[in-house]
Structure formats: C-alpha cells, structure tokens
Length: 220
Image (cartoon, rainbow, N blue to C red; front, side, top):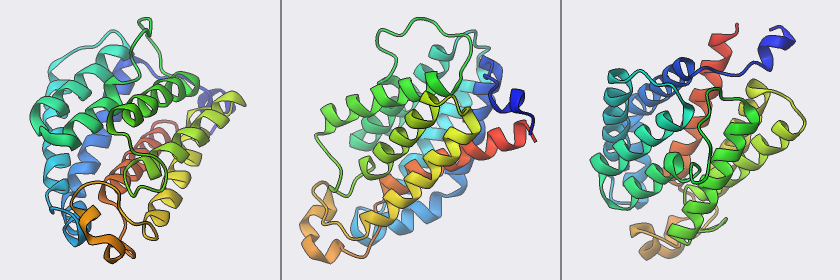
C-alpha cells in the first residue's frame, strides 16, 4: 500500500460502504453471538445485533449522504428504533453519541474517527454506568478506542489505527472471560460466568475487525 493511500480519508460514499460491509459481517456472525450470549445471558444478543444492522443497512442503501455525521446518525437511530432494550440504546449510542457539537464533516480520517468514538465511549459509560472489568462491551471498546486515538495522534492513518484497535478489542474480549459480570442476566451467575466471553464485547471486536478488512480491501 502506498503511504499516501494509507493516510487517505474516506468520502461519505466510502464511509457508507464501510458500514454496510460492517453490518453484513455482524449479521453473518448472528449464530456465533447467539451461542456466546446463550452461555451466560438471554441468548438474544445475536438476534438483536443482526436485526439492528440489517435495518441500518436498509436505511444506508436508501440515502445518498453528503456528510459523515448523517451516516453515523442514520446507523445509530436505526439500531435504537429497531432493536429496543438496553442493547439498542447502547449500540445506537456507539454511533450517535460522538456527534454532539460536531460540525458537518465531509471526510473521515483516523483523527475524526478516534474523536467520534472516544466521545461515544464516554456517552455510553455515562448512560450505562459500566466500566472496564464489568464484563460488558466497554471491555473491548475502551482499549480499542485508546489504540485508535494513539495511532491517530501519531498520524498513522486509518488502516494502522484500525489494525491496532481490532487487536486491542480482541484482547479485551479475551479478558472478559476472567471477569464476573456486573450487568444483565449474567450478573446473577456470579463466578459461574467466569470462563465465558461477553457477547457485547465480541460484537465490538467484530465491528472493528470488519472496518479494518474494508480498509484493507479498499486500498489493496
């Protein structure tokens, strides 16, 4: 990959395709997420995530976007309205929570993505009250956002940032296996939840992995 391409920013059309690809990958992992959630949760996480991203993709395909902001808002609102429940709100906030006060943006680079997701992380933590070690999606999201931010500050580019974010998210998922859950049905299991990874954290990893794959394919 040429250095200029590695540091390139994405147009709204490319960002739209990025998240359509990501949504499709989450849907493809519906059964995996259902199995993971079924071990210690209600078993409906895969269904909810698949439905949310399916609805988001339907909306994305219907609209021609001019700003990055509109894309994130469309995904988040589609998930909130179609999924319902805590997961809908939390994962919807992943896409809408970082937009407050953000001027209309016509290109997405690593710095903007890091900024949006860092603000979204803070919004999710404030809304859900979860923190690192609570066996939630935060355990994958926070280290991923930190890795993305660190790479953005060093001007490493989208691909390098997403590679680091995906690796950090994967490590976060692995760590959830050693945690006792603080939220949801898994909370009632106490130490019996140890040894099982969190489904929400796994979804976060799939999102970052899919975004990384799209960028790799785009600039290969």
